Amino acid sequence: MNVLILGSGGREHTFAWKLAKSPLLNKLYIAPGNAGTAKLGENINIKEDDFTLIKSICKEKEINMVIVGPEAPLVKGIHDFFIADSDLKNIPIIGPQKAAAKLEGSKDFAKEFLFRHSIPTAAYKTFTSENLEEGYTFLETLKAPYVLKADGLAAGKGVLILNSIEEAKIELKEMLTEAKFGSASAKVVIEEFLDGIELSVFVLTDGNSYKILPTAKDYKRIGEGDTGLNTGGMGAISPVPFADDVLMQKIEERIVKPTIEGLRKDNLPYKGFIFIGLIKVDNEPMVIEYNVRMGDPETEVVLPRIKSDLLELFQAVGESKLAEKTLELDPRFAATVMLVSDGYPQAYEKGKTITGIGDVKDSIVFHAGTKIVGSEIHTNGGRVIALTSLKENMNEALSSSFTNADKIKFEGKYYRTDIGFDVKHQNLNK
Ligand code: AMP
Ligand code: GLY
Image (cartoon, rainbow, N blue to C red; front, side, top):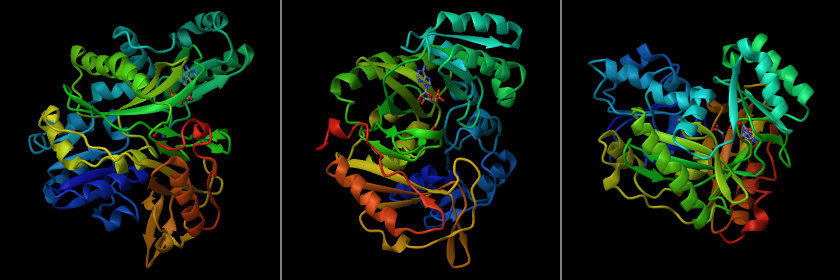
């Protein structure tokens, strides 16, 4: 098969790395890709949401399958674009159609879905500028801290957690009447605060059957001890030590099954990944959010733990035959540590020379923001390289990633040295 992967981050390099192992693969294309994907296939310099150009690439390169990495093309309707086009309609797309991609594209839509299908989640109400005063009244019924969420996509920045009701009211007003997050905050979801520990569960589905992939936990804040600004993710671990069989069974029965069933009942065709952001409150799992794609850097720990041929699983998703396949996992522990540019997640410089990649031993180098310039590899983004290690336990995996993190050099390199800090005491052998 000729496969096209859309996207340019560590997630997409990990997909490319995994698919390159499949005997079913003929040629791999990545648009736009990075310096890492260039070694596994051919990078094509087009934007991942330029549907017209994607169509001409599919025809020219005789593409047999498209894997969509990020959410934007899905929310914009790339799957529907393919279905509606007589030349493209037989090419399977891994990623849902626009109507189901709203699970990520609209927090209000996701909350309605969760309530309609009795899936555990925080109590909420949604407001617009028309009923701002009612929003204030609703805030007064809640206890601090207050959770405000811009309804639409806001590049991961649209969730505010505020300690005082005064701040919450000011922010609500700014979101609704001053477009704090542009049109994404024309509607705001106000939610009850849930106090617990987070984890993520990933599901691959063909719309009927599903496979639950390894669990993961990511570390979103820039600073050690989960402090400072939110980033796309500074590292991740898999499996999550506290996700024992009892918790996983609750997650499957109360959340995964009703989600797949709910999609069917609501007539929302879904072929692709569902990324379920969960919080464990007193041993009970509750949904914080849905994403309609894999996470980054969660992919960098989840895919290396899948032993099965991923392309074969994707083919089965396309043919609605996922139930016939088995998912084989590597029992080892995976950890990934993200090397980022100084200043990230705010302003940072690009174009710094990266050295030392060849010295890495015992870890997998997944490129994120990198670019080939002549004979060199340069930084080309805030998140630059993820180092994944697979070992018998979490400490060994982390220590291998940290040792290799020191070998890779570029001006302004920064990484968190405490990935996994909050779960380390829970399990040292798994
Ligand atoms: P989201 O974009 O919905 O995942 O929210 C971003 C982050 O905000 C989550 O990963 C949580 O850390 C936090 N968060 C979201 N909703 C809640 C909630 N209801 N209670 C506590 N924390 C939350
Ligand atoms: N690491 C979080 C995400 O991909 O949304």
